[in-house]
Length: 396
Ligand code: NAD
Ligand code: MG
Image (cartoon, rainbow, N blue to C red; front, side, top):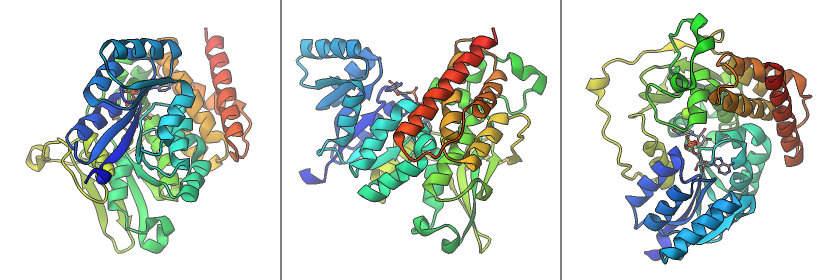
């Protein structure tokens, strides 16, 4: 049976998705073996994870942090080898003994290691949506060329995947799909009076009504940039365009998305809002395994509500759709400006409604180019960050 045990690398192990992934993996020691874990700077957390999961490698992106971790592990007699830097991340995403790579680094920092996993033909469990937003075309080409398996972890995309016909990759229309219904909770400010949005605080923005997540994606959910990034993500994953994706506000977060067919059928995937469900689905696919998630109590849910998304309230959603329609490097610019704006909002340097303004101005300032190479994509990313930072300085 030993050869049936799948070797797994978890990129971003110390984050919200990383921790949920390790929880699911630990429930199935006979199926999965943790080969490598990574984190940015959180030494203590990665140290504890190394003791619990005994990976062969651990990567701390920061060299000083790597040194500290290696020291801590040696003192405990642990055999985990510590690597550092982006090269270390790419290495653990490409190891021959690794078959599955959980891509759960947040933001553009995840692009290179996630791409390395795709290039080496791994099963890529994709949580890091920013990687696909930045490099969709190149990324999907790498997946096709290497024969990698790309399985979505984002709960909506995982739901869509579950509701799709088997051969969806050959084209949605020819497989009977009319459109995708992408659900969104609407975040903490769905009903906040518009006049109050300018003065909401980071603490209010990260307090998501249904999901517990990292800080960046929590702010993205409050602005609905998260849904915008997800529209772009869905376009690449399911080979479609924004015109075939309807965003639906569904405050209960019980339906995780739907697929509408030409015969009038609408398929939905339901479940408790717990990321261990999509993680377990993607790990075991096409089989099903226990995720530790409780049964959905449909009687406790009782009501399912649906509303249209208000683009006035959520300009970030509009900007993301515009970016996808513009194509080329524009989604990478949108993503980079958003990362800078969210960081500035979390540091209380700018206000909540400044986020969308900053992104829109950055998109206007950076010239669109074809996203035909990684160099061009990273140039656009860098330029957008510079523009956004300069705009923030100009606001003070
Ligand atoms: P998080 O902030 O909780 O964790 C991020 C992880 O990435 C940490 O392990 C951190 O050490 C690592 N990291 C951060 N910066 C890094 C860098 N520069 N280089 C290398 N590693 C770095 O984030 P999260 O909520 O777990 O989200 C991770 C990804 O999954 C994001 O792309 C997010 O959009 C996506 N996602 C998350 C959820 C969720 O429920 N949390 C749901 C859907 C999608
Ligand atoms: Mg999502």
